[in-house]
Length: 135
Ligand SMILES: [Zn+2]
Ligand SMILES: [Zn+2]
Image (tube, protein in one colour):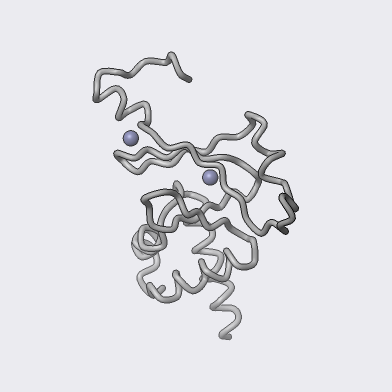
């Protein structure tokens, strides 16, 4: 029965990750716990680590942020707000090709990341700079 339980826990954790927005492991645990109080923090962390190692989810190490997790494994870039911590997916823009590079400068590539950091539209608006000029 242990396997069945593990499978169910994995399904719950993956579902919560898909519904969340690039959460840290702690944030994901908090959301899983609301509906599934019997899943432990250690289980959430362990399963997330396994998922990331197996390529089921992506581990994101954005500047100045704890490790986050992303249920979207298709190549995409990220915008990261240095003020509120928000992370926004950026698809297109020609980044797919760069992110798909498997060998470069003599290296075999295991992971790649394209990150833009700055202020999100909400934080810009709070500063009175918000408009759609840059979008
Ligand atoms: Zn922001
Ligand atoms: Zn993402």
